[in-house]
Image 1 (cartoon, rainbow, N blue to C red):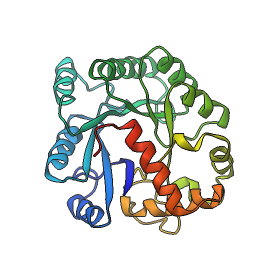
Image 2: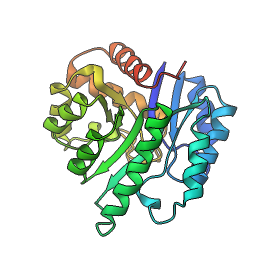
Image 3: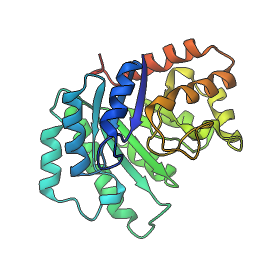
Image 4: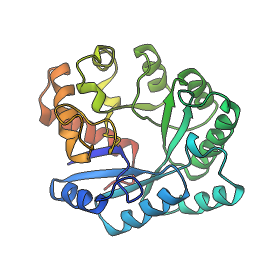
Amino acid sequence: MLIDTHCHIYPSEIQNAEEIIKECEKNNICVILNGIDPKSNKEILELSHKYKNVYAALGYDHSVVDKITGDDIKLLDEQLNNEKVVAVGEIGLDYYWIKDNKERQKELFEKMLNLAEKHSLPVIVHAREAIQDTYEILKRHDVIGSMHCYQGSMEMAKEFIKLGFYIGIDGPITYSNNRKQKEMIKEIDIDYILVETDSPYLTPEPKRGEKNTSLNLIYIIKKISEELNISEEEMISITTNNARRLYERIN
């Protein structure tokens, strides 16, 4: 079985979401759908109960920092009790697009981490041009999880691993100009590598230019296998075991 540990296959993100999920099921691919706001969280919960191969990560990310109310936090708190929820995510910081709301982003991030601690759930963290702040905040919390679509340094990857975090590898690993990430995966512990697509975004080669789906996970596996000089079968086994170890509710 392949496990796509981070994707956005639901109606508000992709028109033919259920068709893709059914194709994944036929190909023995399990998906962890990641929400970012109340609407996507609701869609994901519905899909997770409709399809055996779908699990939910629910959270509020940086893009809705000025919209989330106390009632939204209470709703999420209740939703996290659901048996198909495996993580709090997608959550985190993004200083690439907006830089004038950093403190509000941090406040929301802390609230999400508090919920993860309360429910004893791992977290799925987005950190874009905010690696150091993300690290400093995570150090203050008793959580483990995944650094989604990690683009930081090899040195910081090792520091996140020390905190109990796994490193999410996506489509960009297949890009010819991404030498930095290719070198990083050779230096970190293979037992802390996860594979993810972030679909419908970050399409890997040779499908680049098309809308991404979890069916493209095999191209990410293939590239990592080439870089680490191990078989694709072994890489599938390792990353599946890694995902199961982190997300204990996946069966």
